[in-house]
Length: 305
Image 1 (cartoon, helix red, strand yellow):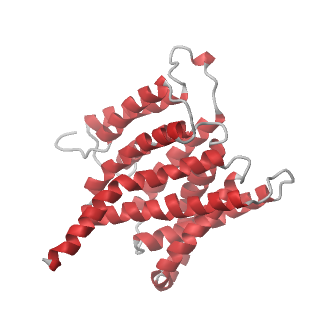
Image 2 (cartoon, one colour; image 1 turned 90 degrees about the horizontal axis):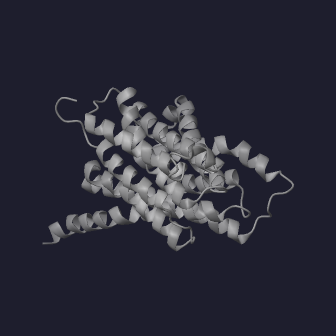
């Protein structure tokens, strides 16, 4: 009996984490919307990934030491991944949150798996079915529906928000980040590789964060800024990645991937319930296009395409 209890407990924990991991990622939307006036975007991103990288680096210190020659030889790859994953998908999201809503961030970002599926076909040579093509069209239509606030026939009256453009760029950068990790093989395990990417991200972020820090009109550092950096580094930075990775290891990638569809739901409800952001019909309409689109685009092609 004792021999089966451990695997069963791991299964239960993994199934629980399927529901928790997307919720941990939504903390980043709260941080992004709370940060303006407290801490600058690049400073926040630098603090978040320096903290997460330090923790991950400590956990994987022996593997990083063994693979130091590989890391030095492929250092440019970790700089590119750090720029995409920590600069564009980090600081730009925080900057975009100054003018757009957390609900928009959650919905727009949710379409990134669609771009990953499309990029895997165009760049990595994977097969593509007509269902996946329909999914791409639906999800992209949903993103556009959110950005134009549902006013397809009145585009001239739409108040375009720079923050939405930054989130769209971050969504595309996340797709590139995921695709490059598939294309660039690495001997590092998941924890060590993320630690190396964090190091690359910190190096890329440092000059931008220094420039923000030297601005005379910046807000003075406060305990609230510290809380935001620690929360972003520990909860979505380390906690969500560990929870998702553990669930994927125990249950398999195919069973875990659909849990990402909970992100827009959690993000929208959090923005509405915690930040008191209004939920418009264009958000609901966008979700009704994006979520089925993600599901269709994420399905493996079977039989003739």
